[in-house]
Image (cartoon, rainbow, N blue to C red; front, top):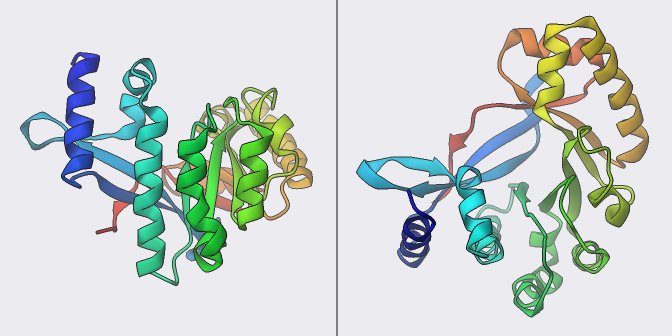
Amino acid sequence: MTDMRVAEQIWDAMRTHRIQLHFSRIHRADDPNDVLYRECLARIPVADGQWRAASALLPALTRLNLVSTFERYVLRRVIQFLRDHPDEIVGVNFQCDGFDSAWTAALLELEVETDVAKRLIVEVPETSHVSREFVQFIRRAGCRIAIDGYGVAYGMRADIAIGHPDIVKFDPSLLTEARQADAGLEQLSRLIRLASDVATEAVVLTGVRGPQDLSVAARAGAPWVQPARDEPGAP
């Protein structure tokens, strides 16, 4: 599929509100009913009635300079979802590669809707070029911040701007390595201890696929986990 075809499909899906919001629960490693929050994962309609994760189309969106436009659309949808569901806490992943007047306008709602802001968790990839201005704006609004994909890039970008995040989420590749070898498990355990000193609220092991991975999480000392699958759940 060409980049322009991707752009056409995304623009049409946004215009007709056909982008689906799915959710992935972050819960206690020893209790799936104890949910910290749910991460929003957008799904985009493509040909033949199929749906694709927005993350799979990110390279095309990046080349077309449409990432921020799409992320602001998802943010508006999530803000409305939080208004309609006052008991929900939702996380949204942003690349945060640019903070301009369009982002300021999109985020201003959060400064006046404090009940919504305190239930929104902004997830920032560890490798993103997030600005201190963006971080300050988010924190001033009352949102929490999570570093996503932690432990691979070793914090050369996002960590510097954020400092101490509320939540640290490990890259799923670390779980794969821990599952396969004792050395990987020891490395994951060490990183979890380090992350516990960095995060002010929670440390999350992502990519969990079943009982074996839950056992690895327990041995590594991960208090929170996120399953690899997601579920529909938003209008």
